Length: 243
Image 1 (cartoon, helix red, strand yellow):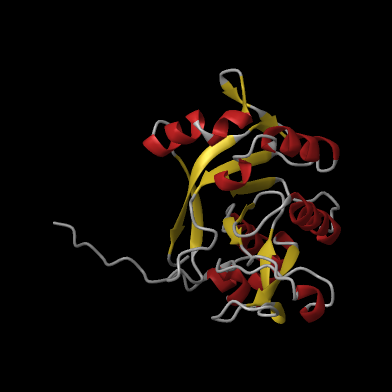
Image 2: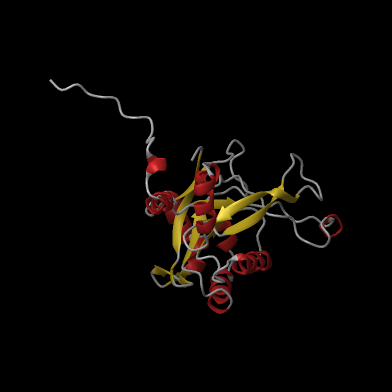
């Protein structure tokens, strides 16, 4: 009878592989991600405290693990995740001036494959400014391809036509637009350095309620309207700990 051997804890000969093969393996480890960005509601004193700018974006999403493995992996990851979004430093209380840009805290992003789920205070001006900034930071000059926004932000009467106009005339590069069903404007309090997932929720009670209520403005006949280059999707936003 054959004896079962325990699985190895690691592949210790990885460093002896040819460089081209190692780089391909690193690249295969870079999977499309869903990352969240959130910000508090603007305060009347922000113009004084922030030099006229709106509060910065915050995020509890983790960055790709390859950035912290070794020099080779980090270099490959930096080529792939070609955009760095500066993040603000958050404190525990809500007051004017409580978020300032932290030079050492950024969120790495590949705008071609990663999806940004935007939480918190959001309006068309801030959304347009964010997408313009992503396009400006993109060495390829293309910008973000996949965006997710809260269903609460799309429930007013003119939301559908306004959103379609923005992405048709100003940001035509958008390939996928997602409306997520998640009530809070902030991620869970106990969720730090975790991962997000957009899950199919078609047929659920919350999906049907949105379809018959606030989502009516986003429909064309019996289908969801086309935003950017494809038909918009209604999904559920979930949060998980770890990588």
